[in-house]
Length: 298
Image 1 (cartoon, rainbow, N blue to C red):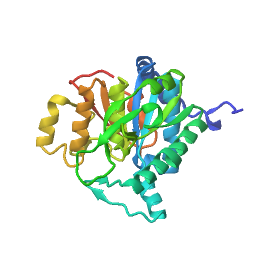
Image 2: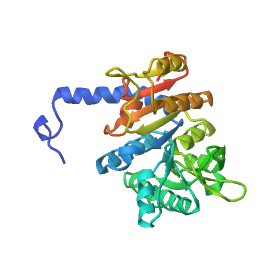
Image 3: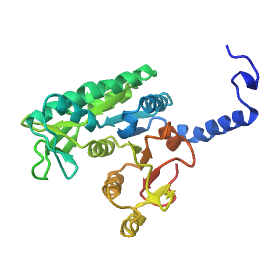
Image 4: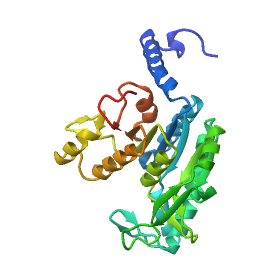
């Protein structure tokens, strides 16, 4: 048991006051989001660095413990490439998307729905939440058709999300950890872009928030991260070059998701420890939120 006094681990009065203020600041957010659904797309450095992985699992566990339904969708491109190399299968990309033939889809299925998925489930479970590994094949969760882009092979576009199984898991206070793989009526299996899967799942689940955890801090305007970007300003920001390059499809996807009924989209830097909690439970946040209109609350 810790002894009393600042020199034995309780900190100074100023530190105690700061901790107390952070907890009080979080309270209205906890109240507002109880029983709401957050879809989180997990990728980037937060999936690779051991410290960041551990912190992310802690954050997700806390969200579940305060009554938020968490649905996690993960990537795993680097792991797929490494597994393909072991089996002597060459990796090719067209416009940033992995060309996926029958050999490669086996690697994708084995890696995403196997080791990557189960490692995430195990880590979350170690921190006290109950996570369940799910692929889009389970309970007909993700239906897809071939992507319209030529030469990509078994890369799919989502046509339907069956939420029944996910609803049951959330109702049981479990965290579905979803590998983005889909299938069609003929039994073909498809590699699905994790960002696209997260968006489709958020819309289908009528999620309160969709949160992208990646290696991008947010939308910069000069040296400043824009805390909030509304749909009305997006076109001007794109035309003015504030939103540019790879951020343009992210922004367009965000507003498509908002149009589908999701209240807010958050883009946060997974390289910042505890960025998930800081974005959700503090007034200032740490990333950029995409909102339908200006002055959206919480």
